[in-house]
Image (tube, rainbow over all chains, first blue to last red; front, side, top):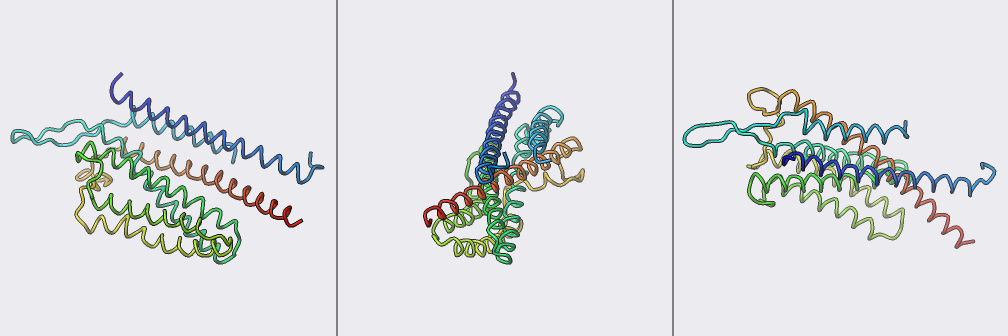
Length: 45
Length: 236
Protein backbone atom coordinates (compact mmCIF):
# COMPACT_ATOMS: atom_id res chain seq x y z
CA UNK A 1 0.00 0.00 0.00
CA UNK A 2 1.26 3.48 -0.87
CA UNK A 3 1.72 6.39 1.54
CA UNK A 4 -1.58 7.93 0.40
CA UNK A 5 -3.30 4.59 1.07
CA UNK A 6 -2.08 4.56 4.67
CA UNK A 7 -3.18 8.17 5.21
CA UNK A 8 -6.61 7.42 3.69
CA UNK A 9 -7.01 4.34 5.92
CA UNK A 10 -5.99 6.30 9.02
CA UNK A 11 -8.43 9.14 8.25
CA UNK A 12 -11.27 6.69 7.53
CA UNK A 13 -10.63 4.84 10.81
CA UNK A 14 -10.60 8.13 12.77
CA UNK A 15 -13.81 9.28 11.07
CA UNK A 16 -15.48 5.92 11.72
CA UNK A 17 -14.52 6.17 15.39
CA UNK A 18 -15.94 9.71 15.65
CA UNK A 19 -19.13 8.66 13.83
CA UNK A 20 -19.76 5.59 16.01
CA UNK A 21 -19.11 7.66 19.16
CA UNK A 22 -21.58 10.38 18.05
CA UNK A 23 -24.25 7.81 17.10
CA UNK A 24 -23.90 6.09 20.50
CA UNK A 25 -24.10 9.43 22.35
CA UNK A 26 -27.23 10.38 20.41
CA UNK A 27 -28.89 7.01 21.12
CA UNK A 28 -28.10 7.27 24.82
CA UNK A 29 -29.44 10.83 24.88
CA UNK A 30 -32.68 9.80 23.15
CA UNK A 31 -33.11 6.95 25.65
CA UNK A 32 -32.56 9.23 28.66
CA UNK A 33 -34.99 11.84 27.31
CA UNK A 34 -37.60 9.14 26.59
CA UNK A 35 -37.20 7.57 30.06
CA UNK A 36 -37.50 10.97 31.68
CA UNK A 37 -40.67 11.74 29.74
CA UNK A 38 -42.19 8.43 30.93
CA UNK A 39 -41.11 9.17 34.50
CA UNK A 40 -42.70 12.61 34.43
CA UNK A 41 -45.90 11.38 32.73
CA UNK A 42 -46.35 7.65 33.43
CA UNK A 43 -49.70 7.61 31.62
CA UNK A 44 -47.78 8.30 28.37
CA UNK A 45 -46.54 4.71 28.55
CA UNK B 1 -35.38 14.29 9.15
CA UNK B 2 -33.48 14.39 12.44
CA UNK B 3 -33.01 10.61 12.32
CA UNK B 4 -31.82 10.66 8.74
CA UNK B 5 -29.41 13.53 9.39
CA UNK B 6 -26.69 11.38 10.95
CA UNK B 7 -26.75 8.92 8.07
CA UNK B 8 -26.64 11.75 5.52
CA UNK B 9 -23.70 13.30 7.40
CA UNK B 10 -21.95 9.94 7.65
CA UNK B 11 -22.39 9.23 3.94
CA UNK B 12 -21.32 12.75 2.92
CA UNK B 13 -18.18 12.71 5.06
CA UNK B 14 -17.16 9.19 4.02
CA UNK B 15 -17.70 10.06 0.35
CA UNK B 16 -15.68 13.28 0.75
CA UNK B 17 -12.74 11.45 2.33
CA UNK B 18 -12.75 8.73 -0.33
CA UNK B 19 -13.08 11.22 -3.19
CA UNK B 20 -10.21 13.33 -1.83
CA UNK B 21 -7.91 10.35 -2.36
CA UNK B 22 -9.44 8.80 -5.47
CA UNK B 23 -11.38 11.33 -7.56
CA UNK B 24 -9.33 14.46 -6.88
CA UNK B 25 -6.03 14.49 -8.77
CA UNK B 26 -2.78 15.09 -6.93
CA UNK B 27 -1.84 18.76 -7.11
CA UNK B 28 1.46 19.80 -8.63
CA UNK B 29 3.76 22.68 -7.88
CA UNK B 30 6.83 24.16 -9.54
CA UNK B 31 10.32 23.19 -8.42
CA UNK B 32 13.32 25.31 -9.43
CA UNK B 33 16.38 23.18 -10.02
CA UNK B 34 19.47 23.85 -12.11
CA UNK B 35 17.93 26.95 -13.66
CA UNK B 36 14.90 24.97 -14.82
CA UNK B 37 11.38 24.78 -13.53
CA UNK B 38 9.66 21.41 -13.36
CA UNK B 39 6.22 20.54 -11.99
CA UNK B 40 6.36 17.96 -9.20
CA UNK B 41 3.50 16.15 -7.37
CA UNK B 42 2.32 17.76 -4.17
CA UNK B 43 0.32 15.16 -2.18
CA UNK B 44 0.49 17.28 1.02
CA UNK B 45 -2.03 19.54 -0.71
CA UNK B 46 -4.81 17.17 0.42
CA UNK B 47 -4.65 18.51 3.96
CA UNK B 48 -6.33 21.60 2.49
CA UNK B 49 -9.56 19.56 2.16
CA UNK B 50 -9.65 19.11 5.95
CA UNK B 51 -7.99 22.34 7.07
CA UNK B 52 -10.13 24.96 5.30
CA UNK B 53 -13.55 23.42 6.16
CA UNK B 54 -12.40 23.25 9.83
CA UNK B 55 -11.60 26.97 9.73
CA UNK B 56 -14.98 27.60 8.04
CA UNK B 57 -16.86 25.73 10.79
CA UNK B 58 -14.86 27.58 13.47
CA UNK B 59 -15.98 30.91 11.97
CA UNK B 60 -19.56 29.66 11.55
CA UNK B 61 -19.59 28.37 15.13
CA UNK B 62 -18.43 31.69 16.56
CA UNK B 63 -20.94 33.58 14.37
CA UNK B 64 -23.85 31.39 15.54
CA UNK B 65 -22.67 31.81 19.15
CA UNK B 66 -22.75 35.59 18.75
CA UNK B 67 -26.23 35.60 17.14
CA UNK B 68 -27.69 33.35 19.86
CA UNK B 69 -25.98 35.46 22.56
CA UNK B 70 -27.80 38.52 21.17
CA UNK B 71 -31.02 36.51 21.17
CA UNK B 72 -30.41 35.56 24.80
CA UNK B 73 -29.85 39.19 25.79
CA UNK B 74 -33.13 40.10 24.06
CA UNK B 75 -35.27 37.28 25.46
CA UNK B 76 -33.38 36.11 28.60
CA UNK B 77 -34.39 32.62 27.59
CA UNK B 78 -31.76 30.04 28.76
CA UNK B 79 -32.49 27.94 25.64
CA UNK B 80 -30.81 30.63 23.53
CA UNK B 81 -27.77 30.50 25.79
CA UNK B 82 -27.59 26.70 25.34
CA UNK B 83 -27.12 27.18 21.59
CA UNK B 84 -24.52 29.91 22.15
CA UNK B 85 -22.54 27.65 24.50
CA UNK B 86 -22.73 24.60 22.21
CA UNK B 87 -21.74 26.62 19.16
CA UNK B 88 -18.82 28.27 20.98
CA UNK B 89 -17.55 24.84 22.01
CA UNK B 90 -17.80 23.53 18.46
CA UNK B 91 -16.14 26.66 17.09
CA UNK B 92 -13.32 26.18 19.57
CA UNK B 93 -12.82 22.50 18.71
CA UNK B 94 -12.84 23.10 14.94
CA UNK B 95 -10.52 26.10 15.38
CA UNK B 96 -8.10 23.79 17.23
CA UNK B 97 -8.43 21.21 14.42
CA UNK B 98 -7.66 23.92 11.84
CA UNK B 99 -4.62 25.01 13.84
CA UNK B 100 -3.38 21.44 14.32
CA UNK B 101 -3.84 20.51 10.65
CA UNK B 102 -2.10 23.76 9.67
CA UNK B 103 0.80 22.86 11.97
CA UNK B 104 1.16 19.40 10.39
CA UNK B 105 1.23 21.04 6.97
CA UNK B 106 3.73 23.67 8.20
CA UNK B 107 6.04 20.90 9.44
CA UNK B 108 6.11 19.40 5.93
CA UNK B 109 6.30 22.65 3.98
CA UNK B 110 8.08 25.15 6.22
CA UNK B 111 10.17 22.71 8.27
CA UNK B 112 8.68 23.41 11.70
CA UNK B 113 5.33 22.96 13.39
CA UNK B 114 5.32 26.53 14.70
CA UNK B 115 6.77 29.43 12.71
CA UNK B 116 5.22 32.50 14.36
CA UNK B 117 3.48 33.13 11.07
CA UNK B 118 0.70 35.78 11.36
CA UNK B 119 -1.92 33.14 10.46
CA UNK B 120 -0.76 30.82 13.22
CA UNK B 121 -0.52 33.68 15.70
CA UNK B 122 -3.99 35.07 14.97
CA UNK B 123 -5.66 31.66 15.19
CA UNK B 124 -3.88 31.01 18.49
CA UNK B 125 -5.09 34.40 19.79
CA UNK B 126 -8.62 33.46 18.67
CA UNK B 127 -8.38 30.19 20.61
CA UNK B 128 -7.21 32.09 23.70
CA UNK B 129 -10.10 34.58 23.38
CA UNK B 130 -12.65 31.76 23.25
CA UNK B 131 -10.75 29.92 26.00
CA UNK B 132 -11.50 33.03 28.05
CA UNK B 133 -15.20 32.57 27.25
CA UNK B 134 -15.23 29.13 28.88
CA UNK B 135 -13.12 30.31 31.82
CA UNK B 136 -15.57 33.15 32.37
CA UNK B 137 -18.51 30.72 32.26
CA UNK B 138 -16.99 28.54 34.94
CA UNK B 139 -15.99 31.50 37.13
CA UNK B 140 -19.46 32.96 37.82
CA UNK B 141 -21.77 31.02 40.14
CA UNK B 142 -25.00 32.97 39.65
CA UNK B 143 -26.67 31.51 36.53
CA UNK B 144 -28.47 34.59 35.24
CA UNK B 145 -25.46 36.81 35.80
CA UNK B 146 -23.20 34.23 34.13
CA UNK B 147 -25.39 33.96 31.05
CA UNK B 148 -25.67 37.73 30.74
CA UNK B 149 -21.95 38.39 31.07
CA UNK B 150 -20.80 35.59 28.76
CA UNK B 151 -23.37 36.68 26.16
CA UNK B 152 -21.82 40.16 26.10
CA UNK B 153 -18.33 38.59 26.04
CA UNK B 154 -19.33 36.38 23.10
CA UNK B 155 -20.46 39.42 21.09
CA UNK B 156 -17.19 41.25 21.72
CA UNK B 157 -15.20 38.07 21.06
CA UNK B 158 -16.79 37.70 17.64
CA UNK B 159 -15.91 41.29 16.72
CA UNK B 160 -12.26 40.16 16.71
CA UNK B 161 -12.92 37.22 14.36
CA UNK B 162 -13.02 39.13 11.03
CA UNK B 163 -9.84 41.01 12.00
CA UNK B 164 -7.94 37.94 13.19
CA UNK B 165 -9.09 35.57 10.43
CA UNK B 166 -9.41 37.84 7.39
CA UNK B 167 -7.75 41.26 7.91
CA UNK B 168 -4.50 40.78 9.88
CA UNK B 169 -3.13 37.86 7.79
CA UNK B 170 -3.75 39.89 4.63
CA UNK B 171 -2.18 43.08 5.93
CA UNK B 172 0.93 41.39 7.33
CA UNK B 173 3.40 39.34 5.33
CA UNK B 174 2.62 35.66 5.66
CA UNK B 175 3.78 32.35 4.25
CA UNK B 176 0.21 31.07 4.31
CA UNK B 177 -0.72 29.95 0.77
CA UNK B 178 -3.85 31.98 0.15
CA UNK B 179 -3.65 31.87 -3.69
CA UNK B 180 -4.60 28.19 -3.78
CA UNK B 181 -8.21 28.98 -3.03
CA UNK B 182 -8.48 31.31 -6.00
CA UNK B 183 -10.26 29.57 -8.80
CA UNK B 184 -8.98 31.34 -11.91
CA UNK B 185 -6.59 29.43 -14.14
CA UNK B 186 -3.73 31.90 -13.72
CA UNK B 187 -3.25 31.86 -10.00
CA UNK B 188 -4.99 28.73 -8.78
CA UNK B 189 -3.71 25.19 -8.46
CA UNK B 190 -7.21 23.84 -7.92
CA UNK B 191 -8.80 22.30 -10.96
CA UNK B 192 -12.49 21.50 -11.40
CA UNK B 193 -12.33 18.06 -9.73
CA UNK B 194 -10.49 19.46 -6.71
CA UNK B 195 -13.05 22.22 -6.37
CA UNK B 196 -15.92 19.70 -6.47
CA UNK B 197 -14.32 17.66 -3.68
CA UNK B 198 -13.57 20.83 -1.71
CA UNK B 199 -17.20 22.01 -1.89
CA UNK B 200 -18.37 18.54 -0.88
CA UNK B 201 -16.09 18.77 2.16
CA UNK B 202 -17.57 22.16 3.07
CA UNK B 203 -21.05 20.63 2.88
CA UNK B 204 -20.02 17.56 4.92
CA UNK B 205 -18.42 19.63 7.66
CA UNK B 206 -21.47 21.90 7.85
CA UNK B 207 -23.75 18.85 8.17
CA UNK B 208 -21.46 17.47 10.89
CA UNK B 209 -21.58 20.81 12.72
CA UNK B 210 -25.40 20.88 12.64
CA UNK B 211 -25.58 17.29 13.90
CA UNK B 212 -23.16 17.77 16.82
CA UNK B 213 -24.73 21.14 17.69
CA UNK B 214 -28.14 19.46 17.94
CA UNK B 215 -26.79 16.72 20.25
CA UNK B 216 -24.86 19.18 22.44
CA UNK B 217 -27.82 21.55 22.83
CA UNK B 218 -30.12 18.67 23.86
CA UNK B 219 -27.54 17.43 26.40
CA UNK B 220 -27.24 20.93 27.86
CA UNK B 221 -31.03 21.33 28.14
CA UNK B 222 -31.38 17.91 29.73
CA UNK B 223 -28.68 18.60 32.30
CA UNK B 224 -30.21 21.99 33.13
CA UNK B 225 -33.66 20.41 33.56
CA UNK B 226 -32.16 17.81 35.91
CA UNK B 227 -30.36 20.48 37.97
CA UNK B 228 -33.65 22.42 38.29
CA UNK B 229 -35.34 19.12 39.26
CA UNK B 230 -32.76 18.39 41.95
CA UNK B 231 -32.94 21.95 43.30
CA UNK B 232 -36.74 21.66 43.52
CA UNK B 233 -36.41 18.36 45.41
CA UNK B 234 -33.93 19.94 47.84
CA UNK B 235 -36.29 22.85 48.51
CA UNK B 236 -39.20 20.45 49.04
